[in-house]
Image (tube, rainbow, N blue to C red; front, side, top):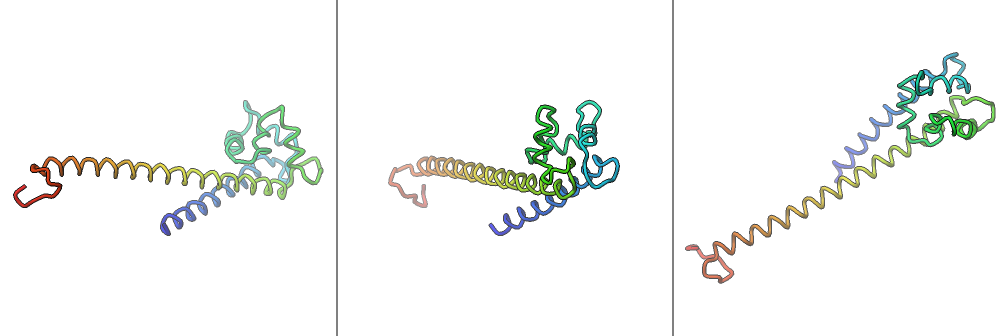
Length: 157
């Protein structure tokens, strides 16, 4: 159990580092003028499904944060930008971006934990099924060997 917890912790740490690094890179890819904040036109260009940046689009699709994901949906873009732009500056600055990224990271880590638990339950169910099958087979073998039907095996049997 401790080994599983340590493995999960290491997996979470590696995922967190990779996710935060990707988030920083995506911010930099969108921030074409290096201003430290994302203007609406920069975001729109980056997320355009035909001409945008594939790495940006892929990250946003899977980031786990609803408002960042909604940047990809033109009908929801304005609402998402308003939700992300907490200081109402008209742009998404690095602090606002990182706040959204933390929410997305939290959700992704939660999903990973749920998946680990689902796999553990499936493995336990498989073990239980195997054990029941093994016991059934062992009983069949015992009955075949117990020719006198006494319920015990003798040396001769």
